[in-house]
Amino acid sequence: MINKIVASVAEALAGVKDGSTILVGGFGTAGLPNALIDGLIEQGAKDLVVVNNNAGNGYTGLAALLQTGRVRKVICSFPRQTDSYVFDELYRAKKIELELVPQGNLAERIRAAGAGVGAFYTPTGFGTLLAEGKETRHINGRDYVLEYPIHGDVALISAYKGDRWGNLTYRKTARNFGPIMATAARMAIAQVHETVELGELDPEAVVTPGIFVKRVVAVGAQANAQQAA
Amino acid sequence: MNKMNRDQMAQRVARDIPEGAYVNLGIGLPTLVANHLPADREVLLHTENGLLGMGPAPEKGQEDWDLINAGKQPVTALPGAAYFHHADSFAMMRGGHLDICVLGAFQVSVKGDLANWHTGAPDAIPAVGGAMDLAIGAKQVFVMMDLLTKTGSSKLVETCSYPLTGVGCVSRVYSDLAVFDIKKDGVYASDVVDGLSFDELQRLCGVPLRKA
Image 1 (cartoon, each protein chain N blue to C red):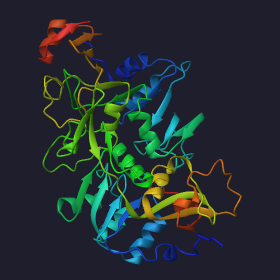
Image 2: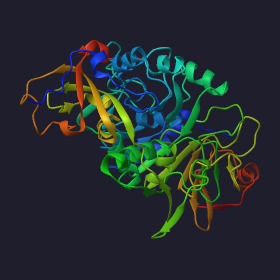
Image 3: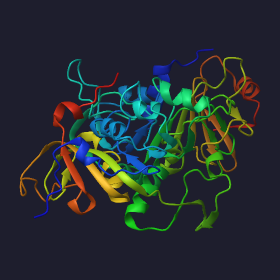
Image 4: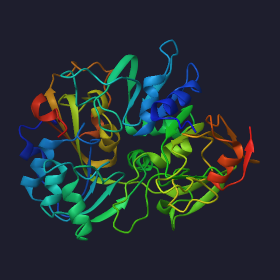
């Protein structure tokens, strides 16, 4: 019997290795898998590369992970926020590396990884600082930049409901990077509001088919609802 | 002269957004445009974090922090709205499906180059978000900005001195003093505010203008 549901956050994060690239879902605090991030801090893996749209808010969640000093590099589109205190300080002290990627290129590089695409040409960023040193090509009258996929060793995502086969649904704009990150990592781990029996999720409404998911852990609605500071 | 205030500028932009348009409003000044779209016109607002058919802010106490806009503020979803993941959201831009995006700017060049993401200051923490994708993605890119900086220099320039967001991507600039259409053969000024002559506008801009 296939059962991807695990009993605890600690079990969900067992085996995450030092040096891993961790894809972390969420946009701001919507869809940020806080329970899994706290679990990763507990688990202790270090020398990590973290991929997220942002670089942490306040002192919890992703910011708390950065504060442990176990993140070597952040790949994101928008690190600077009104409350990105932890990242700002690490960055200014040169204690963390930043790869800044336009948001759509970030999404497409993750999608490409999950879809087995070797690289792709995108018009976004052409002629800007963020395309410096990259291959370019003129195709049908338009200029493009060559971008490579971003593969994850692990993806941590927050979804709404999940079943034991790993099928997932999402809630509103908390969906954001979850579905593509699940496809792009060797081990996708989802925290969900609740787990349900097989067949309870309408196959027409499943957003992430279970093939992309390795572990599912229920953390309750409370832990998933991230109120902004 | 009668400089336009922020709401008048937003109203002016809203006038040019047609029925049925799919529109992305950037963070800051462009957000105000939503308040001026006529109620009898169906316009679908896109927010790049995964929602088409975005509605106004919820009433106090009704916020759902799983339902936010690109500025990370709580919003609502209109009947008929759709949610989607980030790759689909940016496919809507890059794939040329979005009709209009309205962005703020530090500078726009006479060739339509846009600078709005980074001042280039050495101690600044760079952040780009969806700005570069929006700049090249929408069929029409409108910019909303004050024409002059606080020190009086024109933000419509021959060549941008700030790092670029996109090359040759801006089609129209709505400023507090005039509207500028950026075309292959030059910049056309229209809607010059009362009390400002074309020659005076030309002098303030310092770049060659044509009368629309």
